[in-house]
Every structure is written in structure tokens, then in C-alpha cells.
Image (cartoon, rainbow, N blue to C red; front, side):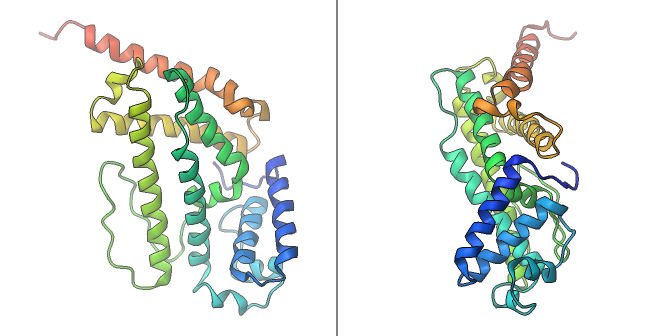
Length: 256
């Protein structure tokens, strides 16, 4: 996903919904109003294009108001990202439904794409917004994060988001291995290391589809009906290709 400047139908709907919520807050929930303002500007302008003062203007509050809840913009963005990870976790918890492996794989894709369509601002802030004051470690799905003790509330909030992202991916990989245990992909999920690699490959494909849609480079109908077209055109051929490759490796004669 590029530094998006997108106003899709879903984005417009979220912006309208956010505006409606703000009108009922009257800033009794200042924290919520500021996060909603960040979600709005992230979608309209792209991540990293605004300051706290810009959020104050959108939310209609004084420049000093954010400091009642946040040390700085990084902490606010981390709070929005953590909120997004919680929403995604709810989706993953109910995913992998269906009577056969293809249906379960399709539900995994459909649930992820539904999350992106429903929460596009969160998606951008979760995956494409970098903290200005905290250096992000390289992603390693095979090992837990080894982070120093946070020195302030901002670092603690950023670390919470990183931990949440890693935990969600681990849960997703485990769910995928269970859901596809009766599928032709089972050998590609047989060990923890292979399951992680296969899950990472599939997540990369799913997120690529979502990124194309967010950048308005993919028609809406690719995400309709649980992502049926995206599943049939992209994910299912990939899954069958992996299965064929695994089978070929298992039946190939040993090398001399």
C-alpha cells in the first residue's frame, strides 16, 4: 500500500460515521474524538502527513487538549493501531468456517477483506504508520519480540501494538494449520516452521489484495460476497499451486 490518498466508498462511509459520532460527543470523549480525527486524516491525506495541531482543528478542540490523554502524536497513533488489532482479532477468532478446506480458506480471506473494508483507517495505521520517536524492530514471526522496558507511555503504547500484531499473526497461523489439516496443503503446514512460512505467504497475498483495493486499483466486486472473485482468481490458484509443489517434492526420486 502506498502512502494512500484514498477516498473510497467505504472511506467516505467511515468518515461520515465518524463525523456523526463526533457531533454526539461534544468532546465528552476527547480521546475518541482525537483518534477519529487521526483516522479521518490518515485516509484523506495519508499517514505521516499531519500533526497534533491538525487533529485539534479537525476535532474542534484547543491545541493543549490532546495532552490530557496523549504525550504526543506517536502515542495517539499507537492507540489507534492497537484498537485496530483488537478489531482484527475479533474477526480472526470467528474465521476458518466451512464444511471443507476451500470454504474455510475462503472464510479466512473474506473475513480479512471485510475488516479492511469496514476499518480502512485502522488498517493503514496498523500496517503503514511508523512511529517518529520509537525505532521499529524487524518482523520475525518465529520468535517473540525482545524489547527493552518502555521508558515512557509512548514507548509502552507502541510496544503494545507490536506485541498485539505478533500475537494475532501467531493465532492466525495456528488457525490456518488446523483449518487446512485435511487439505492438500497439509504437508506445507505439518511443522511449526512450515506453518509459519505458509501463513506468512498467504497473509502477504491477502494484504496485497487489500492494499490494491485501498489504493483504488481493484474493483469493489473483487471483495464482494466474502471476496469470492479474489479467492477464485488469486488465493485458490495459489493454494492449489502450493499443494502441487509439495506433492511433486514428496514423489520426486531422491537425489544421487
